[in-house]
Image (cartoon, rainbow, N blue to C red; front, top):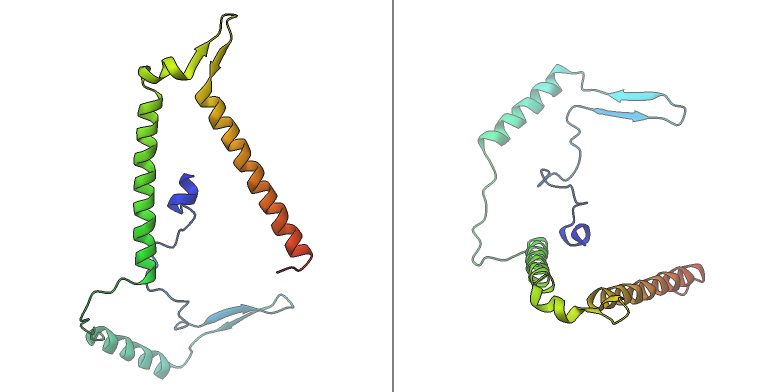
Length: 153
């Protein structure tokens, strides 16, 4: 659940605005025969021109347009929604832990019969609900695979 909610698999931080590889210094490619081809700038004039362009770009940054209204783009909206969802999920889990582990409810959730058998109704309900949801998820996965194999979609 933590992995799914928090997107811990997303490691794109630190690359904001990086849209691809810069080819300023040349490229290295490998051919089908296993040979490596290297393209490097060799002319001093080309290197000087690139340096001058870089210096010009650093001295004259592009002007930002003043926006009339603050508009939240889709990525920011999704990040905000995900953060809110994770916070609510953590708070409801903390409340559930506090309620379930309280001594007041243990008298009602755990029952000892006359022959000494202990029954925990809460854990039984959790087990059966997880088992039922797992069966539904498994059937959905089988349906998806069957649909892909038969080209239904």
